[in-house]
Image 1 (cartoon, rainbow, N blue to C red):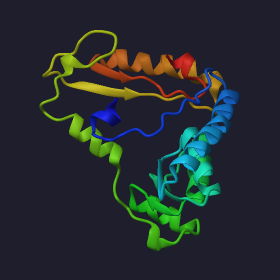
Image 2 (cartoon, rainbow, N blue to C red; image 1 turned 180 degrees about the horizontal axis):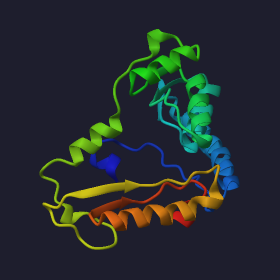
Image 3 (cartoon, rainbow, N blue to C red; image 1 turned 90 degrees about the vertical axis):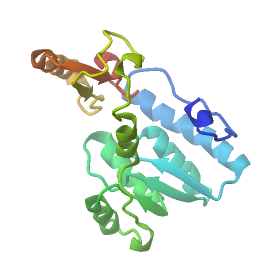
Length: 205
């Protein structure tokens, strides 16, 4: 809906997320994603495929494009993170042909990985640009969707997001409770964003 609102036509819509809360469902979703995306690319025949960051659906996109000899452009490569996401991000970098990292350090990391520096461009972080535009002075906090109390439009607030750590699933619930205690002790209005759909998301939710 957001894509259509921005004026883009959707040529294919794919469903491949397998329901579940385990590392196995992440792996299976990636496999199904490769099948679905490969079929779509075979039909659409794009000149370039653009993918972002370190998600497992991004890995599926990268593999599907690379194996079909389609130019792959990767946004937010080169960052150093933990867990499986860090490995996925670097793997996508090695499958990609054009790189759009968001910091100079990330750009240098990509070049150190052996990528051609002529095709590595530090463009900043589109996610931060979007967040800054959304968090404008005109933002009416009382109109945000979600659960819980409404926040006064002129309130100072904290923004919290906590995604599952897929390599330590057994402690995600404990970590979430500790974070919740800290938020309560601070006592400031808080917007807490929903976690992503990685394994462990149910315990956080």
